[in-house]
Image 1 (spheres, rainbow, N blue to C red):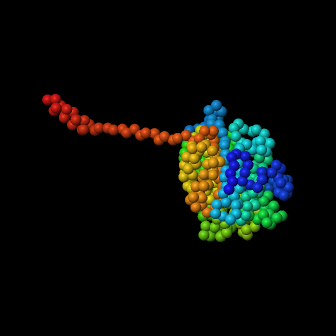
Image 2: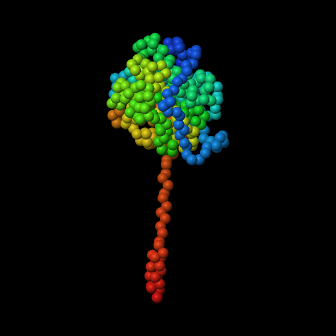
Image 3: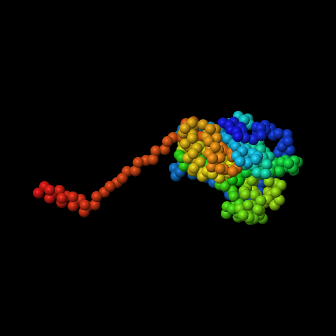
Amino acid sequence: MEGTEGGFGGCEGLPPKPLNGAFRHGLGGNRKVLVRHPSLVKSHDISVGSEVVMDDCETEFAPIVRSGAWTDIGYRRTMEDAYLCVDDFMEEFGVKNFSEGPNAFYGVFDGHGGKHAADFVCNNLLKFIVEDEDFPLEIERVVASAFLQTDSAFAEACSIDADLASGTTALAALVVGRYLVVANAGDCRAVLSRRGKAVEMSRDHKPACSMERMRIEASGGYVYDGYLNGQLNVARALGDWHMEGLKDGNSGPLSAEPELMRTRLTEEDEFLIIGCDGIWDVFRSQNAVDFARRKLQEHNDPAKCCKEIIDEALKRNSGDNLAVVVVCFHSKPPPNLVAPRLRLHRSISADVLREVQSSLDSLGS
């Protein structure tokens, strides 16, 4: 098992600067044209409430990011998960300062059929994002494009070395200034704690989900016993180019295009939990927020909190590899929430008042 606080971790070596020679081929040059199936879900705004948030720098919340991560092989024979924590990618990649506040990236990558795809995406996805000339002005388009470019680059790597054949789900979260953008392809999940309430920032892409089933069937695939084409228990993933009938260039029932959600962070947003499906097999979203919140109130250490989440998942008999990232948006621990005391309004009917008055009058006579 392993864990980190801030910085990089969880994949084989640091993200390449520039790309490692083994993966340099086919990554530069002409940009591929991205073709999207019309049934793919577009990004969603997660409301911060009915009150309109104004662009007033003096009153807006400025997040302070602190992160930690932890992994465990669990009860599996091999470890196929990876993660990445970059609290300041401007410094790591030499990107110019384009916003006030943090410029951070976090990702969890849940591999299957081997760890090569998870490591490849861990090492290259952020690079495709920050090197796009439209980043961060068109952040959602850039992130979606980076997922597909990374997927295509891994296909080219696999065409040279067939031993790399594997797949991975991927969830990436970017904190740029006051905005949180989450991109998900697969069944990892991101959950935001908003004053103790769980706000899901991603949707699990399972083949049995009605929206995913419609897209799969429209792309020539089918769902059998909860599995995509009877082979894979996720509806979106990067890699898996070796699996027959799942991907065909820019089409096919297995999509690498992420679903995006975004929100503007406020004072009420406390922390974000990003975990592989092994975490969510044994934690409900609100349960995970409640658990992490208690631990952060005890020690305010996101890395230690991650370890405690994984230890608890093992106690609950999660049977998968485990990887989790916790990102805090405040320097202080989450505050105690005190439920307001309800005021009881009591009233006496006019008839009762008359009876009371009559009784008092009789006593005085």
